Image 1 (cartoon, rainbow, N blue to C red):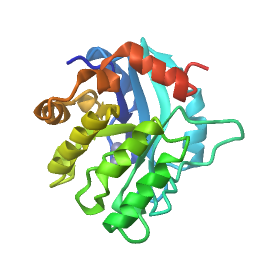
Image 2 (cartoon, helix red, strand yellow):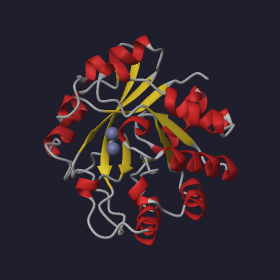
Image 3 (cartoon, rainbow, N blue to C red):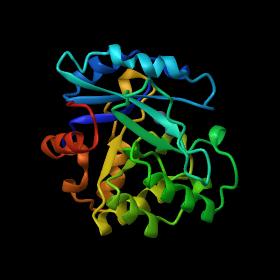
Image 4 (cartoon, rainbow, N blue to C red):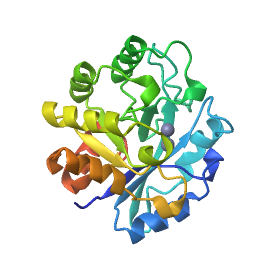
Length: 241
Ligand SMILES: [Zn+2]
Ligand SMILES: [Zn+2]
């Protein structure tokens, strides 16, 4: 399986990650990737960058050393309302790439099955969101069967996060279940490294293993096909504008 993009990469700006944008780009190029997204944390994640950091992302060239660099964020789903704390930018400024993820430190309210289901249904209505980030969390289970078709219809990409196996204990079965339902209902997944150091850009092995176990169709892995991926970027992001 060949991949052309890693759309979930952190930098030193997240303060618990250890590489720069340029180091991530260099690593992406070495691994033959055509695109990366810079998706640092925000909001209540401790010591995450503030609005000015995201505002000034616009100084970054769209293409560095042959690699397309999308200016993004990993926003927090903040509770059952599904509000994602995307930083406020200048009028008419929009980030290229938004991942919505649940993190304990930024979640407010109950995290029972019903509240999490409601949260993800509400996130799917947010037009700014591209990716449903690492949603296999053990303590935030939602109704995969009913919500994943809603993600599909809203053109959200369901992330199979390769770091989850290492840093989110116990979530593997949930990730596998999510992959199975994506396969069954024809929802696109995106395989991401969620790297916090440049050497891990494009490190997808643990996610690929899950997809192989469920015999996941390659045509539904959006970042395994350049044409399909660029078509998505044209339709649902500002990257080529
Ligand atoms: Zn995360
Ligand atoms: Zn992340």
